[in-house]
Picture 1 (cartoon, rainbow, N blue to C red):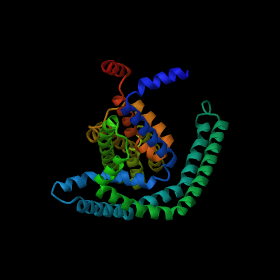
Picture 2 (picture 1 turned 90 degrees about the vertical axis):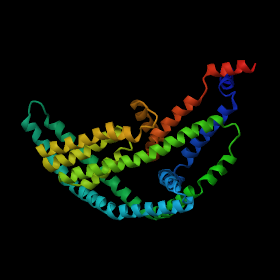
Picture 3 (picture 1 turned 90 degrees about the horizontal axis):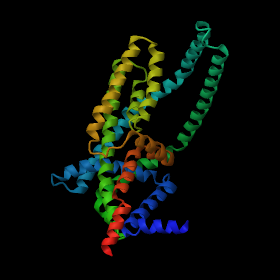
Picture 4 (picture 1 turned 180 degrees about the vertical axis):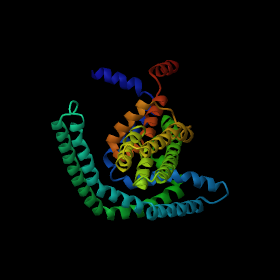
Length: 359
């Protein structure tokens, strides 16, 4: 067995470039896995720096110094962030509190409706089964309420950490953007010399990550704004809260759209019942989802590497399980990274031919 492993290692890692690529990937995985929670502010700063690097490069075309361009873009970004924080978040939190306050009434209505089903359909529905379902649903809601309450207290305790992050992240963004070339040169100094394949993978992934982050932010904005106008025009309750959820759902391909449809349908059902207004809303919501999947995504991610839907879903499950939100957010780039590594990795036949040429 050990002899076979030694032969496999000799055949696969005879090229020093392969060994360097493999070691760099393993090192990066171990750092993210064990120190990911500590490096969250750095990850946030890197994501936002990728997002803002494009407008900085655009300003530099007009002979503007990179430092000046960084300060201009950062001022605009911070202004937009403050406007969103003061204008949007209070409305979202207010509607979220209203939804939580209305949940008991919504539960009582659903409970009363379920208890009437055995009398309406005595041959098809068992009263004992309905009572059992209602009891389980009540216990689930009580447990969920206790969990949300504990999380609220934990969030209050983490306000100080959020304030620190609100200061650290913009500072790191400024230095990452202003000193981009210097930082990259400093990191490259400590890398091994035999990194031809690593450079090939990095060049491909750098463009992929930049396009992905920029495209996702634009997609979130377009889908969220379009959904809000539809919900607001149809006078749906909690329109801002639900629009934010729909916008953020695009972070999780396929799964997010299916999951966020449930609260939208439930709120609309309790507000209007099975009426034409409910049908109009669901049709408009379905049109937004269809346009997102068939128009917005192909336009924004036309330069991205095509991945099969099964691969995307498996990537969301695997990387989300490893790194939580950031694993879900970067599921597609990470899957693309795996594909890029496999494409860059020479096959056994190519290695054999290279060995014969050397001999």
